Amino acid sequence: MSEPLIVGAVAYTPNVVPIWEGIRTYFAESGDPDTAMDFVLYSNYGRLVQSLLAGHIDIAWNTNLAYVRTVMQTDGHCTALAQRDTDVGFTTVFVARSGSGLSGAHAIAGKRLALGSADSAHAAILPMHYLGLAGVPAADMAIIRFDTDIGKHGDTGRSELDAVEAVLSGDADVAAIGVTTWDAMGREELMPDALEVVWQTEGYCHCMFTALDTLAPDRYTPWLDTLLAMDWDNPAHRKILELEGLQRWVRPHLDGYKPLFAAVEEQGIDPRW
Amino acid sequence: MVILDLMRLTATLADGATGEVRIESAADRELAERWCARSGNTVVGTDVDSSGAGTLTVRRGHPPDPRQVLGPDRMPGARLWMYTNFHCNLACDYCCVASSPRTPHRELGADRIARLAREAADWGVHEIFLTGGEPFLLADIGTIVRSCAELLPTTVLTNAMVFKGRGRRALESIPRDRVALQISLDSATPGGHDAHRGSGSWAKAVEGIRLAMSLGFRVRVAATVAAPPPGALAAFHTFLDSLGIAPDDQVVRPIAQQGVAAKGQILTRASLVPEITVTAEGVYWHPVAATDERALVTRQVEPLTPALDEIARSFAEQWARAAKAAELFPCA
Image (tube, rainbow over the protein chains, first blue to last red):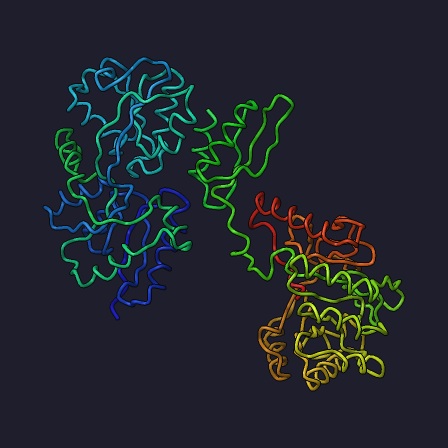
């Protein structure tokens, strides 16, 4: 029997503990001793990636920015293992007050754009990237940043709520938020008199389990296969999946990280952030 | 905006924890309830004034399925407790219903018990518990137990000190296959037991346990213990092992501040998972509070079905509000 794999994650909500205890129990009960795992929680993604590189942990549960950062710092000597189904096709939604009359990326030009935490790929980095691709450079907007919870890469969602409140109070015209935040608000269904969608980016990828390429496939393959076997229709698995925000784990969709690699380069994002 | 406040709140709550948000109007409340329903969270309390302004208490996540948490055998309605009588040969100083030789009998009566058992079985009750007082002081206890055991598995709570003469004959008349005896014994040696129940009671109880086992009864032993000294519980379990009591039939429960108990665990209807309890005076929420007016569900004993329905409904509401607040007071 081999030593348990050590998985690192960032504690961005009190529910991170039950999530990872549930995942650990799931692996312990799988019946395969080669899938045994334990977890370590970090306060921020910078420390998580640093620990992966230092060999303190075997696998990091990375945000998309933390994954990109790992690739850049290892010159690609890392392995993408798995992600949530909800990490594939993630988008950023630009919202304005209902009745704003704003529609499409070009309508955001000349407006006050509220962004979330500077280290949030979905609420700060990629919104600027996609607006640039659409022909709306940063210089054409008044950018208002809400750098709350820096280090957690936007996981808490707090900076996005700050950005939305700025729109509702009239301090900003448009806010860039993740589609999961927009869903969690209730979209137009619960916001018909408050907010409306101005524009939405195309899909990109979010979180990713990441290992260094020094972790041998025979070490991570049993663990990975067991992870992918979690079943939404199993009530015990479902509780964990619901808390972590997915229906099933999927294999990596690496094309979905290209926009963020490009954004990090063009915006000069510190690869060690 | 209330949705943003709710999102900020729930982001800080562990699953199952609760917090409060301010609302300014009935419209806010409606929106909050719609958001909770959509997002899988639960409004568990409302405190608003006539204008609709006030606070909502919100629970992170859905309440868990009580069947999973409690187990199907502990769901309200799975068990029916009947206080056959309230008089007792002992006057224990922690008795939750203040039984003693001088206590008015308040007997349910064999005929009524038989009817209640039938109605309970038809409703869906799984198991009957007969308690008192001391049930074996009743001349017709054999008839009572048989009438229940014909319908459902039945446990009789006794101090096992009256298995002489008529009591012995009643005991021997009881079928063994669907009946268990739950005998009270508080300690491995006479000291702790006799201090609450009277000198010499430990030896008689142990004698009663041995007799019941020799007659082929399943015997569960239940101790009522406040603050056992170090090692006392281990010694108690070792003693019960030596008597041949199965580990699952060794129950240790705290003293409840009910009846004549001046000290003990304070139990309220809101903090107890109900175990429906019938006495001659009414239907109660739980056997540990069977003389407590605050635990009274209804004075109407028959028909029992309305009370069973009411307790199941009340528990469902209570569970949705609190989920984990209610606790199991282990009477059996």
